[in-house]
Length: 288
Image 1: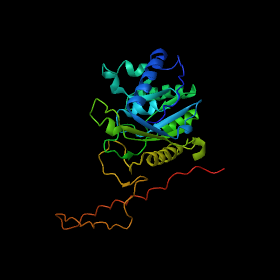
Image 2 (image 1 turned 90 degrees about the vertical axis):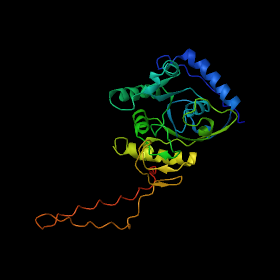
Image 3 (image 1 turned 90 degrees about the horizontal axis):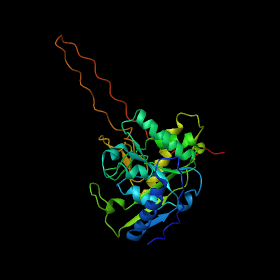
Image 4 (image 1 turned 120 degrees about the vertical axis):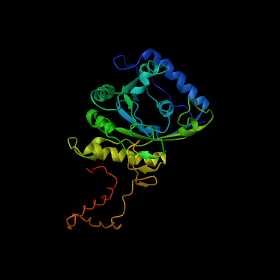
């Protein structure tokens, strides 16, 4: 098994969570995780030992929220779905551990959650958020939502891409328990800083930064990237491990046959839908 990382607890009485409960609960959880599972961590040097940063992992299983924090050298706060507040098993424990519930339907409640997350980052702490927004049910890596990038821009904090493997085998979807003595690999990538991808006031920066983040997560996790949001039912264009592949521009279009009208004239043909534009190349950091 890999060596358990040194851990420094950061008290934060003015932020969500109970310092007293978190200190002892995190110590117990971290010790248990590294005793019962082979947690193999790479790239830990990319996680800053002080100052703000957003930890951005892929999301495949509930236990992602156990293994990624257990691999970190510092305390971390996180976004969690608001439905946890409806379950008596989690409604008190998770917020005490620093979870910030978010209403995934959006609106004012979602903005308040992001404001709280900004307080965590402005206080110089780590914040974890899943850029896909929810768990991937098909084990592909899905298109990222821009919330993490917007927080990074707002708080001048780096994004740390994280790709992990093995959590689905430990806790498959729908299972309450976690299988012990399995291997979990957690890979931390190099920080992505907003200023390296464009002007801070450029409204396109959030999407550009998010696409770069998902590209790095795909490399670290080995997943296939698909160009749909997690949970969408439409067909995804995919390319193993990298970017989605747009349909060929040369594909023939089916001709439209005019429909006859009762007066003997022909109805105008329905214009054909333009082919999908080629997927842009990976966003690159601007050079000095």
